[in-house]
Length: 137
Image (cartoon, rainbow, N blue to C red; front, side):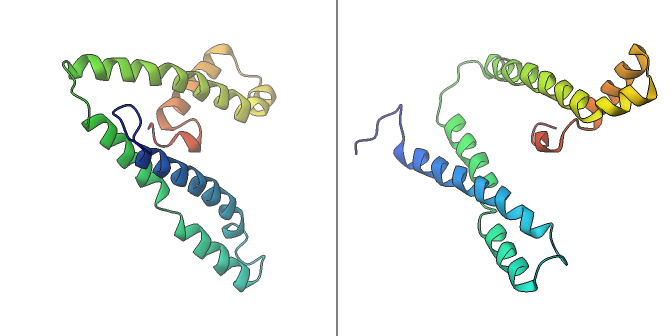
């Protein structure tokens, strides 16, 4: 296959490998949480399985860095502003959605006022609304 500037096949292949590795990582986590509830052999198999795909997150980070470094940016401030704006609004939206989904019963049972819910939401946004958004925090 011929590579051009628009499509680097080795990066695409690396992304596919890292994507499947993330899926394997998440599926093996269930076995690790069963420590003491499952046999030692099963837990160790899950542990080895989990450990063997831990490279996936650093690979995604390195791919991002390689692709950013390969471009010639005329105005880095403008580039960063554009990227941050593309990330921040979906991040805030989904963080607020997760806060309300995860705390709906608490809001309902405690009969909180709008101001209390707003304060609670701001605190949660500050400390982390949901664990899987860790990378942005």
